[in-house]
Amino acid sequence: MPDASDPRLADYTDLRDVELRKSLEAEHGLFIAEGEKVIRRAVSAGYPVRSVLLTRRWTASLADVLDGLGDRVHVVDDDVMEEIAGFPVHRGALASMERRPLPTVTEVLNGTRAGVTAAGGSPPEGAAAGAGAPEEAAPERDAVAPRRVLVLEDLVDHGNVGAIFRCAAALGVEAVVLSPRCADPLYRRSVKVSMGAVFAIPYARMDNWYDGLAGLRAAGFQTLALTPDQSATPLDEVPMAHRVALLLGSEGDGLSSRWLHEADEPVCIPMSPAAMDLGVDSLNVVAAAAIACHGLMRR
Image (cartoon, rainbow, N blue to C red; front, side):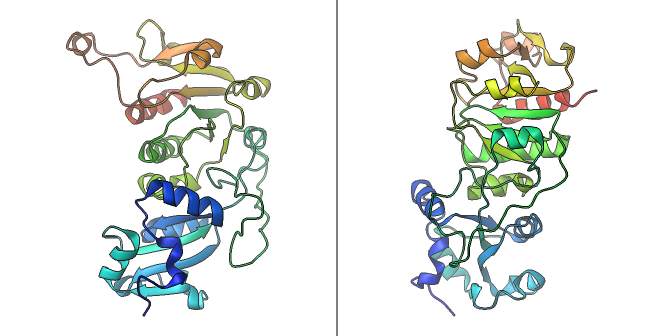
């Protein structure tokens, strides 16, 4: 049975050290799936397994996933798991998964790579995707161009990004576009909070924030900028085009003035006047995203 010093377990080191994990995961082109359900969803979405680290009581329930992995399966005691990860892993199972090449915004908007929901950034040139194996071609599906898209500007909290992906997937939003500074949807906490929904919805990352909305306009999207400003048009009253992109801003400041001004129309979620009189003038970004996704999907 391996111990915490085993070099084969380096993928799982200090999972709560955000800066360390960003560096390690980018360098090796990997992400971590936590818990049986999320691991299964990652495997079902086509992400190759680098290795699995789990306690003995989870070996039976994951037997079909572990079959054929051979020495890439590492069974440890609970205390060793905690020592490696840096916290008690209550779900008892972690998997190191290979990232896939991230599709471009154009590909996602055209639906030409709808089956690819890869990393929060392409692996660095020359980084190994797996144990010396060549990078596998990303799977493609029949082209289905999305009609309803979320665009996230500079959301930096991984939990919020994961929760918004879960809302978007559950309510039928067909794609997500990230600004360059958005948090990585495949960071462990994002994946965990989303319950694997980050694998269910295509997404891409802009390489240019300043002109980031130009590609949406070129693809024929009406752009709606969500704002807490109650003078904006209520979302449920806006005539919607065939293709609509809803813009959501960062946790603290909301959308930048540039994106607010560039959007076709600012929209709001109407708030209770009584609540506003008491100083409750906005929703947190996840609650706002859930309500807005529901409104976005109306016919």
